[in-house]
Structures are given as C-alpha cells and as structure tokens.
Image (tube, rainbow, N blue to C red; front, top):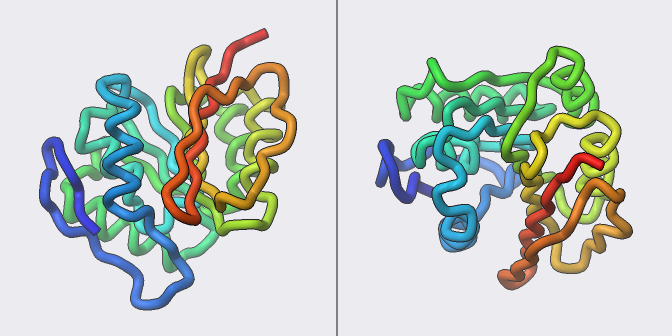
Length: 185
C-alpha cells in the first residue's frame, strides 16, 4: 500500500499485521481519486473508519488542506498516527477515537464542515446506512460536498435522504464505491 501521487508520492504506508483492517486496494484508490480529480485541492476531509489512514493521506498528498481521521480502534489510530508521521503531515491532520456516528454529531456541534467524507467501514453491517443517516441529521458536509462510501457490492444503500444524490457508483469485484453528493434543501 502506497501513496500514489502528490507530495508524498511513492511512500509506502505501514499496514496492519492482521486482517482486522481491510485497506482500500491501490487500483481502487487510484480510480476513486481519478474521479474526484482536482476537487480535492484545498478540501477539508473526514476519513471515517480510517484503518491505516490510506484514503485521508492520499487526499492530503493530493492537496487537501486538512484531514480528520476517526476510528474506534486505538490500534488503528496508532497505525494512522504512524503513517501521518511518515508523511510528515502532522500540521494538517487530526485523529479522533470513537464511534463514527457519534463523532459526526460531535464535529457538527463544534462547527466543523467538510468537502469530502470517506466512509470505508466493515462490510455488510449496515454502517454505511448509519453514516448516511448521521450526515443527513447533522449537516457536516458543505453544500455540494461528497460522501464517498466504500462498501460490499452486495450491500444496498437503501433510499437516500432527500439531501443526498447518488451521482456515481463503481464496482471493483466485491467492492463498490458510491459517490453521494450533498445538497442543502
């Protein structure tokens, strides 16, 4: 697993020694960022279920202004912090321990707003749907911002709240990436 392009191009990230964390494959990550393109430059990014920090650090490397990483696992956040240090991105990042949906509410109450939210939770547990509900309830995304959800190809997102529009969906084997745009009603 590596940073594909940008200021940390080619840097190998530390990966977990077990299979509790499932990092986004490089080919999927490259396709995802090719779709996002230059919209990431100057963006505020939230990386939920960060695992290794792979998506958030790729965002930072490509020009995101600030990235917040969250995970429920202390071990995962230690791994994220190690990878942040490898990239020398400490001044442009923050890590938060806790439940993704509770942290969405907490960040909203603090006045944080994001242009991109990445959600790559464990598959087939209804977590993407919970994140969508939490984001709809707490307007954490800027108008025109995106939730980019990585989920199982068999995991149905269900009916999206009126403030969200599924604008693109890509399937890579068992993995599906859904690009969901937020618009204030």
